[in-house]
Length: 64
Image (tube, rainbow, N blue to C red; front, side):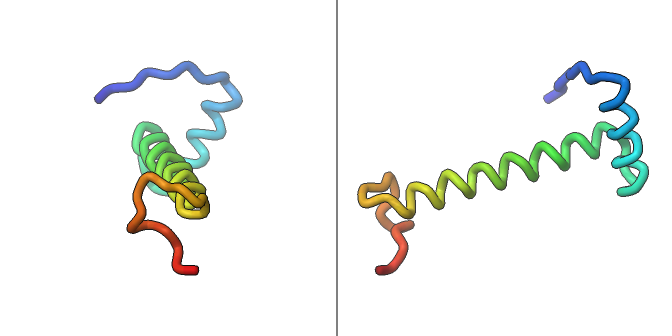
C-alpha cells in the first residue's frame, strides 16, 4: 500500500532527524512509527475489553 501525507516544514525536519538517528529512510521511519502506534492502540482496546464484565472474547477475560 502506498500512503501519501502532507507535513509541515517543521515536521519534515523532525522526520528527517528521527530517520537519520535510527538509520532508516523517512518512509521506513513513518511506517515503523505507524505500526508501533497501531499496535499500542490495539492493545489498549483489547485491555479495555478484558476489563469489562461482558467482553467480545471470553477467553481473553482476566482471571479474577
